[in-house]
Image (cartoon, rainbow, N blue to C red; front, top):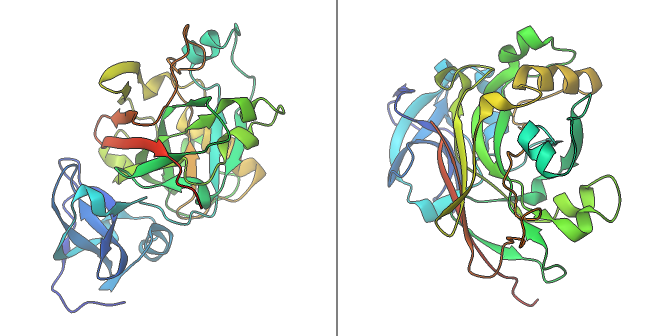
Length: 300
């Protein structure tokens, strides 16, 4: 879709990021600041996009290629996951040492601990998230998510920034009893609609490049339960990109969820788990707040 509205270069200051907003019957990618009620269409060569992967491909991963178009309404309830259909969602386990320790281990893994999700796992920022009735052991995990901007294979750590577009926030909601059915984690991690993402994707250059040092905080019903900095990752973003691209090609819009800090609910005494009516917020410095209320799954 193209637009005749005059465009101007995107002003990547003060937390401006890319969001997906319901507009005119479907989602569009727009430029929005955290908490704003308005946004501007995100354009590349005058074209409007309904998802981030094709926009990033058209822009060749370059924020400078993205322009701001017409103003649209963009209240929180109209936001969708900023990446709707990523080709890959790659998650990292045990990547903060304090989280390793709270799980009863002395040392972290020798290599990045990878596991997958799929696009059906994603949920919108500020949306109500349905708790599956099959479990009462559902936990929160605040995470920094990397959004890939360009295609790459066998990328050295020192070159990782060349394929990173930016960062957003994620909640790697985990169904703990299913997670421990087998060693592979997938049964507890890849549930439909249980991974909120957003609210916006902020270019990496605005957040410290490939080694961001950002405050990350997880709050349940107003109580801070997770509080750390993304610079304390065991495997930093460049090392993750290098390891993953040794194994597979990363493409525009792919996601890397970099792991959760200490403070998860399952290891607490007593356990602190998500229940009907719980509200959990992931807040990352420079990105904003990802806030979701959890509700019972409706029958049918």
